[in-house]
Length: 320
Ligand SMILES: Nc1ncnc2c1ncn2[C@@H]1O[C@H](COP(=O)(O)OP(=O)(O)OP(=O)(O)O)[C@@H](O)[C@H]1O
Ligand SMILES: [Mg+2]
Image (tube, rainbow, N blue to C red):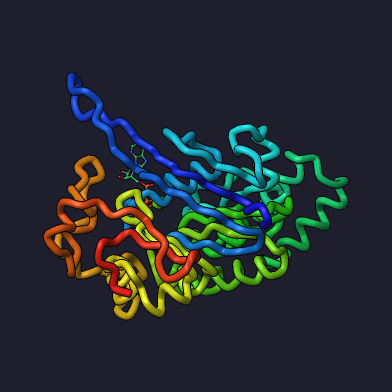
């Protein structure tokens, strides 16, 4: 068996929030027993509503945050044992906000070249060539190289962020909602660009979105998260054909009625996304589940294998 590129084992993450001067800090369980693997060159999609823990997971996998417990293993070694520079050579992020992540006082060319400088890759001339080639691959016009990011559109800025993430040849790119700040018309272009770059550079991706149709387009395998837990995982195609968890089924059906602004579709579920500081008993999804039975309020389901080893779900009464 080949070693996965990245492996996360039983990640738990708790934030402590203080709600008043004299009150004890109260725990908020942002991640609860999350495990995953990403293999070379594959795209793993993560989907779930706002607040389910996607960005917390991304930050932990990037080594930007230390989990309360659990391990992240990068190419067979704990990520915590990597010097920051070495880790950055292997894993690069693309974040949601292309406005906040690019320093406006630098030119686009210098921004893209930054990882090459930091890692002392190539001569000055080689760096310039690499940057020009990368800019061309992400579809930036030549004249954009001397511009400030402030002079570019949101979509162009995200192309700069993607070029910067890929220029030093990482094995994994972690994309946290990379298109949700963009106009709907630009979103598809950026998604297709990422797919082309994956094919060209054979780079693996963790791709986070609250939009299941985006995950369907992008991911080879996917995980559905709810309140800090993984409730279903498996091949994207199989999950779309026959979701096992009622929450996945609701998300899938919402894909057929997307709202106009490309934001979070109305899932039509009872109640709102619950407060992570006050977890429901039993199955955490039961208060909103359209097919919950009395046992669901008292018995906690665990993520178990179903169908074959490649699929898992955490439901006492799976649909398929
Ligand atoms: N730095 C923090 N301090 C305290 N609580 C936090 C912090 N970051 C996240 N949380 C809480 O942890 C939970 C998970 O948040 P996270 O940002 O990971 O969710 P998300 O799935 O990325 O949401 P979104 O789709 O809105 O980006 C939420 O309840 C959030 O309020
Ligand atoms: Mg987030």
